[in-house]
Image 1 (tube, rainbow over the protein chains, first blue to last red):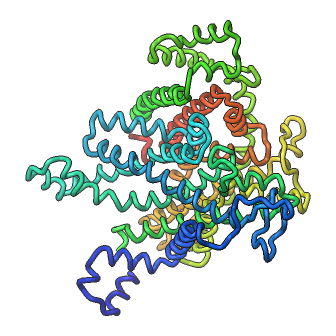
Image 2 (cartoon, each protein chain N blue to C red):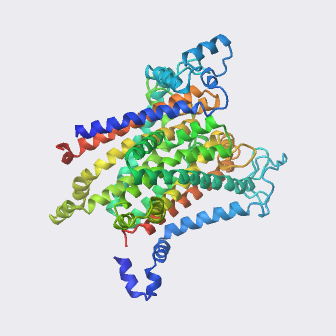
Image 3 (cartoon, rainbow over the protein chains, first blue to last red):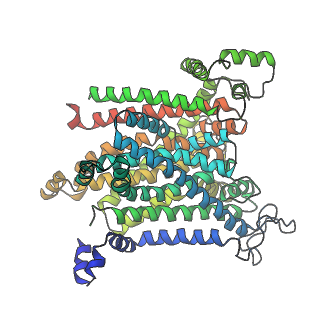
Length: 295
Length: 314
């Protein structure tokens, strides 16, 4: 209600205002927490991308003269158990975390969305088979499935991404299927079919674009889950293998030195927290901005 | 109602069959002979031959699957290579520990999550609502193993209030058992509380705009009575069913929590099994948690009917 009131008082270009992407952007911008989330995400992406050019020590360089040193002018976030710079490892670790989040969700979307669209659109046996498989996958708790898959595939960052991707796939199958079920009854889909448009065209031109917004929201929120999952797997030793830096494995080492070097546990945990919070806030904001019901 | 539940049970059967195929298929992800999964480090040819015979490993894969499922149905999920114990026995041994952790976590989750959700819905749009939401979202974003590490650092290392790890069975020393379990269940409970708070909030917001709530307010009932008596009772149905569905989160959360606090439960069993390449145990755990989840789902469906009198007659 308040939104409509402000819209009438502020003169806007009627053409611009009518375009849905402008409306969405406007709504998104008015959502302060979503902007904070977006800023956090952008910040971490920039740091991960800039890791090679930021003047920081080599994340793998050990220094036996500076073992477990508290944060100082030389080492802003301290050093770890073999004298490596914690901040350098944190910055390089951002790459592993973000890559794991994005790649695994990419895998899940790539497989999940087409399967969900097919199940929802064709129904019948196709739907029954896909749906039962989805339920079977959803029945195994996300992390247990990821751990089991990572264990059988063997520990490495890429296998962790595959394991998390497979574990997240049923989320997207179910979501896409549900969307299609409601969209395919719409008049514009009916008429596209009635004029004889071939099925692939109907799917790509009318179904897919309308499935996309909720998928985008879910993907953003799932990246948050996937980053925690990757950190958990690395923490357990099933993800990124040392000496390559990752936040999860940094925490795994840090828990053995809590008494002597608490900063080793502080920074990686805070980083995971903020990047995950960023994706969660962004996802919530996108959901509000893209929801057509709340105008 | 019975027809609906029967339909749900009938749908659950193929799902369980697919789960068993998936779990069986896991061993084929391993490079090499699936016999290695069953035998572990056992290299005695006679034993290997006996296992090959038992699981029909020379037969085609579908027959192997049937043999495996046949054994599983009789409670035989193979033998742990580390302890030589049957997998089912091993799980039965660890389960009570995790159940204690789960129950205590659930208490934290309910006591924090539901009141916070009600408060935030009743004060929708105010600072209270905003703060509750930020706290809940932070709860969802904190990796719970890190929260565990930080609590150990503060409560056990710095203040020396509670033990950092270990497990005491309640039958041995109830007070000590609760004390050691307090921190782990708080860590796991807060993660669930965040989810629960968000569900409660949206369920309450939905109910608070209903006609009967407006009527109750129009009658001049106090806001307290309206919210607790009229709204909460109706919002409770989705909350209770969702609580049953938190089972998955609870088990997954237990894995890391038990790892941090070295609690010898179900979750630690998974991690140890993974590290010892005790694949039969990993398979057994995946199978049992998944089937457990399906049953929790059926239970949630049944609760939905029990709690909602409007559906009972149908």
